[in-house]
Length: 177
Image (tube, rainbow, N blue to C red):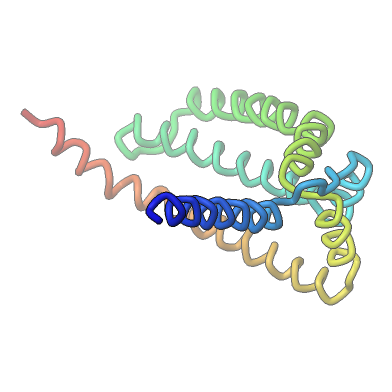
């Protein structure tokens, strides 16, 4: 009898394992079609990705300008920039911005973005997202969300000098012997 109950127990465990494998297999998108490059490009077109990238680059440019100027003012002990410093900043900042715009250009990043989307989304998901982005009510809501995100980003950037001023004494205190 012990041998028979052992077989029953083993059989029950085997059925349980098979049932679990079947359950897990249903949860996995086995056979889910990878999104085509063309459909992802359409999604990127309708979701405003290029516009968002341009806005992000502009925000980065503004942040870099602010950081360069704040660094020069700090180097002067909080005083106004000298004519030489202002001239150097006026010369350097546009060059830095040009490199940033070149490296973060849509044409340069588009292929990478397509691959990222393809790695995360199935064809069905891309198709559904395209439908959403073509819905005028959804588009209006997303435009409002972009405006909210941009205003939030500006707010955070505006806070950075104040935060840096508060952090500076903490760092100075930490390195005192």
